[in-house]
Length: 382
Image 1 (cartoon, rainbow, N blue to C red):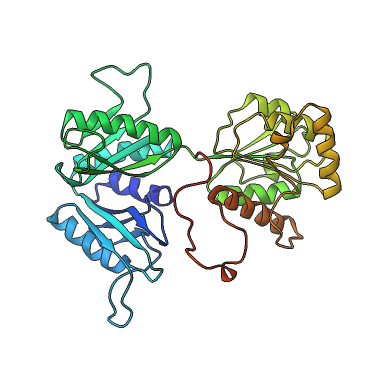
Image 2 (cartoon, rainbow, N blue to C red; image 1 turned 60 degrees about the vertical axis):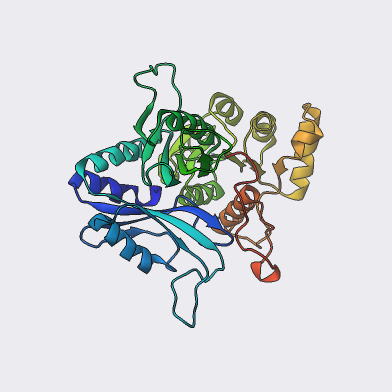
């Protein structure tokens, strides 16, 4: 959704009707994950992608039918029949796609409210009925519970058709939102759990994960660029005013001049945060890493030679850090790609972050067999 967010907001504000196709389930190998979207407006303009090109043509035709009044639909695509020129996926998996229209001003206004929250990096979940006793396409928007919420304003809007279903989905959506997970949930017609009568797709939009880069060196500039490209909110921190400047890090979301450990102890770090320590200076590294290892960060990568790493470990042990915490360090940082330049090193760091997040092997795909895309979600909380 974020990749076409400006386009969708523009269509809502300009009053342009459009249909939105959303991947709601993936079975086996598939090009895009649940939540990937493609929009088709009344003029036939297409933005986004649900399969990288395999089934876009057919989805386009379905979207045009839905936009013309056919009603919301869930369509499935499996393995393509190359000899019969059948529509499908060449990768061997199956995807399910919900196609629904935002044809009226009221529908676009409701969607615009969600898009505005996403644009402001505020957490929100959107639940949509896919099948069963409730109406396909019925929609409920859920925000995290706030102390200021009242019974008349519970932090939700819309309905899935029954009070019990709304209540059950609201509770579950908030749990999924806290974890950053998206997927299909099953209920009874009135929200009963452990029943299979109603399928509800819950799409969560959490703020972008953070990348904290410590050490304002040339490698940090390249790492900040690739971090932004991967969708992280990037902060570069260094205690040296001459190095920590906006001009040197134009792609970073913020540049902080502070002692690294002091900044880390004062800022928010969650289980999706990645920390890249590129200072390779003991007076910065040791207090910074001692603080980093007390956080729930998903990844802590540290630059330096193997000799520097051994010396760093000895200093951290002397500072009281135990072996279980030291085992969390990715050091020397990055995968073995033979990198030489700052840009190549940034790619190796990014590759290790991706590998750590999804549980990949880091080996060439040509040497492996089985599914290319790892099943399930990230290896840690998200």
